[in-house]
Image 1 (cartoon, chains in turn red, green):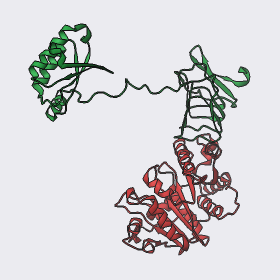
Image 2 (cartoon, rainbow over the protein chains, first blue to last red):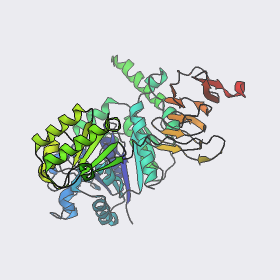
Image 3 (cartoon, rainbow over the protein chains, first blue to last red):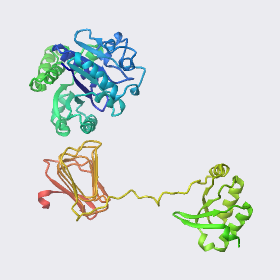
Amino acid sequence: MSARVITITSGKGGVGKTTATANIGAALASLGQRVACIDADIGLRNLDVVMGLENRIVYDLVDAVEGRCRLKQAMIKDKHIPNLFLIPSAQTRDKTAVSPSDMIRLCNELRPDLDWIIIDSPAGIERGFKNAIAPADQIIVITNPEISAVRDADRIIGIVEAEEKGSPQLILNRLNPEMVKQNNMLSADDVVDLLAIHLLGIVPEDKAVLISTNQGTPIAMEDKNLAGKAYQNIARRLLGEEIPLLDLDKGIGFFNRISSVFGSGD
Amino acid sequence: MQAKEIEIKGIKNGILIEIKDGDWKDQEEALLDHIDQNQGFFKGAKLVLDVGSRALNSPFLSALRNSLSDRDIKLKAILSTSLVTERASQDLGLEIKMDESSPEPEKSPINSILDGEEAVFLRRTLRSGQKVEYHGHIVVLGDVNPGADLAAGGNIIVWGRLRGVVHAGAGGETEAVVCALDLSPTQLRIADKISVSPPRKGKTRPEIARLENGQVIAQDWFEYH
């Protein structure tokens, strides 16, 4: 068995690459898959924080690449799921510490013992991004329903296609169905129309996602949360299951009902 | 006659004068004499002076420059194999190389060949950051996304949504047109005219944009046709 390498990228910063990496990793691992998440954002590491593993870091990606440790030593086991690992990036170095061929070598070394390798790409289209996509079998572009983010996603898709990495798949993050209804936000159709790639999933906007990333517990572990459910579905789709997109309107209706029961104002 | 020590050549942006070995004062005098005798030729000229290996420091050069500028000649550059001269020239703000570049290579205009019917056909989505330039026509079967850039000497036809920047008739061809199933470019140029799309109202229809009385106008294809 050889692991499949997926790189999550976006072009623009702050659209949810790291959150998606942590959640898809957790969701796949909770389905029994052996998963390693790699933080390729050298110099600005934060996947470890989102996964709640910051205090366990001894060695990092650059240590492994430069031979200061064995690769296994740089793999941190998750707190909740035993078959989920993190390879953190170095905080004190920069993108030039690693080359695309280092990344390919590293992934090839990991492949035999895993089912999935998920790489969290840095923002931008420079060295760090090239490092992140070099070993990828499949690229997932994540974007927000926001014109600047979609524009950058489009650029990234163009570059990925030019590198002959195949057509990437799309995750639309932080969609707010209410705002779409009021014509204040691009709809999923608008975005998919423009980008013209396969839609892997839509993750609704939800404060609980922010709370969970701050707490270092992926939202994908919570079945009752719609965003968590969306990540679980994305993981299942990656495993080849046919799962329809969540009906976000229904979800919102459900939450509205709850909030009206409790008289909550938000 | 002393003038035989002075060699004069026409160069691209002025006159190149080579000064042979010999006492600098004599040579300078000979040069100025020669200029005075041929005022009509030298007036307003830009001069490049090749002084060979002679070491000249700035007082000499600035004296010469003043004498030349009295005669309405601009001393542009000093060529020399001497470091002293080069440095002095630089101190005076003179160039130390002949301007080799051909007279201002105009940003090569795309040659239009409207009736040559040469075209490039693209069957894909043109994405942000992608640019296509072609001297003939450009035909796209697919979308042109915002941030993409097309420039054609001739016409541009987009069988899809046109949302990027397009320039038809980029070589100045005012008869060039832009057609698209959904004509909503970020910016549309025909020849030297630039326009932006007004916000769309209602359903999208195939449209053609062209120049009419020096204005870019867009028209429903079926009304135009």
